[in-house]
Image: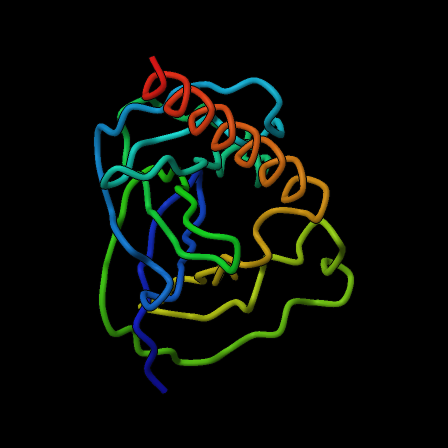
Length: 165
């Protein structure tokens, strides 16, 4: 079986997103810190004129590694809009032939690992496939949505105020 994936390294592991969910891969993107976001959200990045929250996957996955500013960011589409995800390095983009698909063991599956879609073996390595729609917990998702709504409202109010002057 073959799937189109964007495989990336993070800490000592390999992960991937379905390439149909990926809108861009960028390096050196500036991320502006925003108060009121969940701990795993570094801030906002400008992607083609749209402000997009950026998730620090090292914090989210508790790798113990520190994310280096200016590294690769994979921008994915979710049901709530775009989101950037910091990664150590994009390894491969394209068709990935899977030898086997491994169900996540029951002992590991929890609310904290809802984002793990499956584990596949590719080129002698295990790759954890991430479901972009489940990356944030319901609480994190709500905080991001509220903050983004507030920021958009503030920007619209400011724009209206400037046009009335």
